[in-house]
Image 1 (cartoon, rainbow, N blue to C red):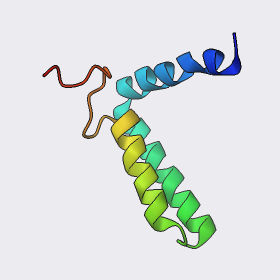
Image 2 (image 1 turned 60 degrees about the horizontal axis):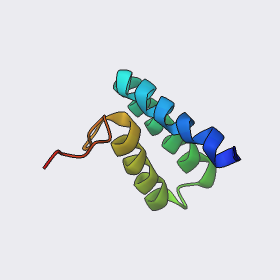
Image 3 (image 1 turned 120 degrees about the vertical axis):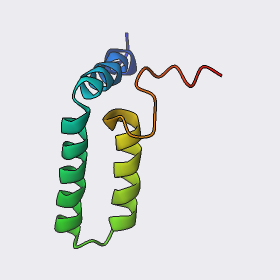
Image 4 (image 1 turned 30 degrees about the horizontal axis):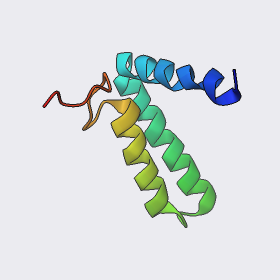
Length: 73
């Protein structure tokens, strides 16, 4: 069992917890992005925003499905 195997379930657990607490997950994502913007003087704001949007879709319940099964079509 390699490291990737050990960590594979970690993402699923994070998604489950985030799905149960989507509002808290989104707040954390926003605060994390704001922290990075502050520390870098906004130099990477476009990349930070991109990362925030990805994280929100993946963990925050915005614009994506929570079960990871697709749209069923």
